[in-house]
Length: 163
Image: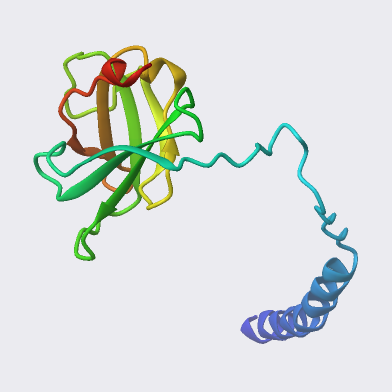
């Protein structure tokens, strides 16, 4: 009884050894090509904004993190605000995101519901939302990998910079 089962098993393995590579090759050949994206739709692209005017630079906003924060403004004095960050090479946090939280609400270890994602922690300027210039708030560093708030800034108010 074992011999017929072994023979059947051998035939099935030989058939699979031939049919699986053929089926894989046919599947690869039958795939639809990836459509080329020569241009993104207008809804997904935005005009590049340049933030050239330095309003101030501070290194004392974050208590735990040695981060230099620069507040930048658009080309004219009535332009939008942006923040840029710089840190030492040894400042490494996994998947660090920057959030803006309006108001002085009590922030615990979880991300508040009213937090606005500004972007990833890079040296590129991150535009602030329009309501950030009208009311005060805090910047938050949130580690996506650790799923926790790494650091939060002192309360910041930009009203005194508006002209």
